[in-house]
Image (cartoon, rainbow, N blue to C red; front, top):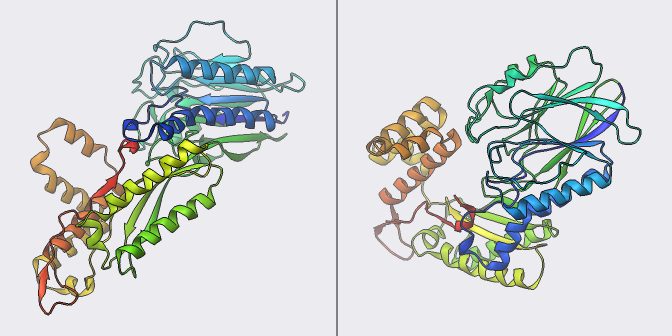
Length: 455
């Protein structure tokens, strides 16, 4: 087998809308709106620098089916740049940019192959240095936005060829609950098709599901909400003489979304808490000087500062000030080193003796015991959530949202509900007071989140 190199990317979501942008300064909004295009530029740069023989893009080039004129022009520009370096491109369309969506009419580019939707197409890929045949690339696009059948089973490896076989597919393998179940299939379905490398798209989290054969989600190239944290990018894949593959991940994002924990444990007053938050902002700025960071601070632990956060609205006040400062920075320079605080998630609590409460024969003790049991059992957690939300389930939309809610999110609901119960039901002794005072912190568990996250 002839050795070669290719780049695998997916879910470009060019010109993403970034829901809620009306509530942030224009300079910050402009950076976010440009970020998917900047990531595309980096992708082209990696392909050229790494001297790949070709690029495969596994769906959702655009963010919506009626893709913007700007998005289409910028993508055509990127394809032309790859063509100038003799780099071929093979791509499919997914649920966000199906083939029935409106597109610019233009002259097809010889180095670009867009696979159709009837049956998986098969095209030979060449090594760009000498034109030798190195791979058979297959792909299947979405004809419309919703493809609910298992289209993986329509793929068939071309017989009688000693070339490396790559399949492009936009699908949900093994029913990932965080994404729509479009083109659902199993890992076994893919393995049985006989391909050497499955270049997947649709799931925005980077995953290598299998290595023999390789079944790979590269994730999206630019995070777009607090649900899409961490580095985003593409894989450069080297295939050697034996047909073995090695993968190298390349970061492409220019805006990095992240969640950072700040414990209030040991913080005695508002000034100490503000110092801790401001130091965390500067730590992120130092850690990612070449990126814009969008961060949600998760406030954890137990301590005296909790009441300031929940009852007196200190988190909301500080959020406004931090955003004001970064808005000024955004107007003065480019995105590098910008740290936009997307929000605070108040998951802290008052100081309690939890072990003692767990032993008590009281309503509060029983509530904590139920919460602990539900954390350990998926069945008990599901039953508790269904029971608690039963009065709301006549609403069809709420039923749908609950069915799409993952176990981690349900556990987060449980944690916040338990903490709220502790706060409302506990009696704590006020500093400087000789008698107990009932603490009713109605804002417990509230997230002070900027609407730019779209969540």
